[in-house]
Image 1: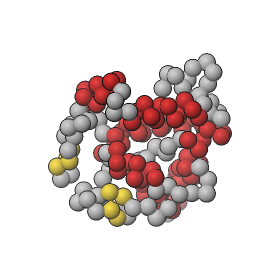
Image 2: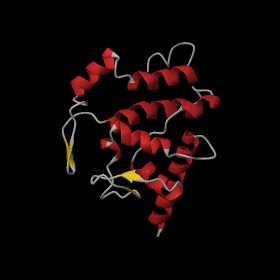
Image 3: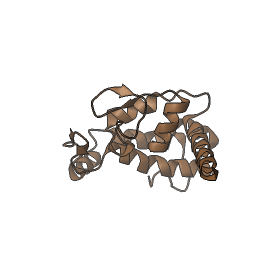
Image 4: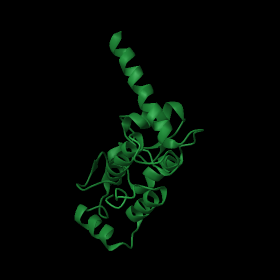
Length: 163
């Protein structure tokens, strides 16, 4: 992340390098991080998972700062197309409604998002996250869609609160 924030500013290439770095199974820093955080040994048991850091949490920690950097103008507008959206329950719900995306559930089946049966964003593994990420098909960039989805959610929430 520090490389992206250097004096020359973030670029599309640096952002792509960051995503590749996080996915590199041969990078000894990432391998060591996974060992420390127990990522390799995580297995789901019903609704519970072993303690450790999940890929869903990592993606949000990386993608939120990049989104904010883009929103405040630290990223060029053309760099927005390489940004991955920070997936959380609100975005999963909006994707289910707006993009007709299906989501992984504990029983292994894929269906519409449901807080009671879908795997929460914070417990997604790498494959599940990538499946959701790759299902985003919009006319605008995914990050622009995500920003609009948050606004749409906030408006729905405000209207519900007024009734």
